[in-house]
Length: 461
Image: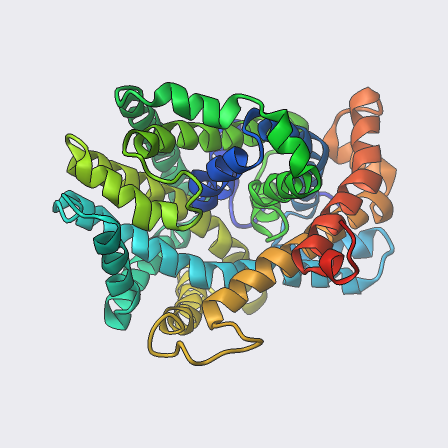
């Protein structure tokens, strides 16, 4: 049943796919969450566990998602419907595709708002607004932005227009051209920032913070650290939201899924490590708290840039870097929805992109208003932005990952997997077969149960 090409277009080269999939995986979370989480749980000890989790959980599920996408050659919904039909399975499996598109839709609605903060900070840094500010002034600066609904709407609108402009141009003319520019630019900016960090005098401290194994610290929080490593390994690869599946549908038949997956995972991890080496020398050199979490980007780092020589320039470069990471992720979140609109409503790609982007933009307005004018509107004690974040990160994405593993490992025939992965039935395939059937779904299920608090409810761990 395998089609040789997608009606939406194809990646022209293997490199184009690797850059696109890496761009989808590399996002705002890579730039701040991985580094401070590593430091919190024993530095190098956590990094070792994280890399192991990527190999045993992230890679098998990513291979499965790409495999399903390439075998179906359609949007995630239609891919899962056709694969289920071909394998004699229930048509209800198309709900996995709906789950992915819903996840991407909800994530992009608030991701665009946060990307808007990044755009605003590019100009704030360039204009010298960080010069001489202290912690209180930095907090006030961020609070003023978040509390200004009109300004947030403007940045949210600009970012969504940028995303729609790329997606509307198609696979070759839009997505591929964008990632061929944005991903190398992102890596160059990261290397420049790492180079600057090496001049601060605190580079050794940053290296030790990230990589010197502190097994005493790790053992004290071993269960918590392993759960965080498993969660980070799954979420950092952009799994379960349809993006990797649709990108896989544009991959040429003769391109190795296993090799491409390893390269994407490696590049994603490299970016996270480089981000830590860029951020923490600056943090330590200025005596700031390295475990500031989300506030590290918009409240802690501006203080450091305000004290640095050429801080306005490097602050601007840093937030441009963040913007590029957000942009490459955002186009992959919109693409599955646009592909489905083209296939099912017979829309042109431009009209589908505008319709999809407009829908996301409207939902994003609710997210940005939940930070200010609608701050009293709560659903399950959460505003819209926090609710969508919680639902996607803790329920929808892990559930999608589990279902991908179950379908690929238990319902797709072994012969279909062998045919699509093109690995033969040697040791590599057998290892993947065991991991996707047993370890990966169980591990993601544990992450999901931990995230929604069931372990605490039953006092497990």
